[in-house]
Length: 64
Image 1 (tube, rainbow, N blue to C red):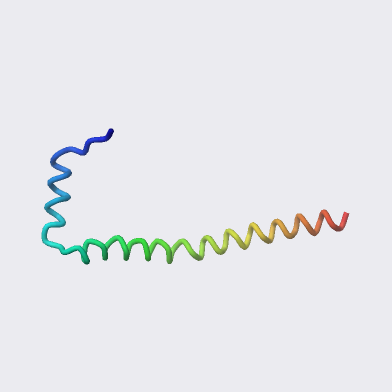
Image 2: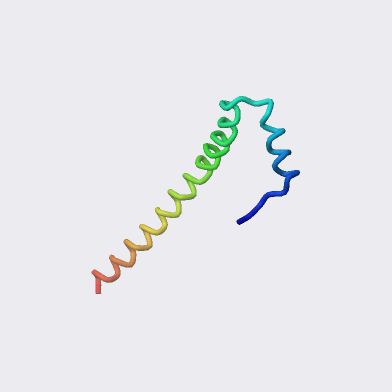
């Protein structure tokens, strides 16, 4: 099992000592929201391309 160095654990413990639970949750929540906002248009575009390619393939198969 991975064991983090003591200095890293102390740094993590010290960085969160001045923050309350709401602030500690707010940072990852904002980061995940920003990540989702960036990924959504890329995902929509990728699915749109995949659907268009599949429709072209199906249309070609039906025409033959």
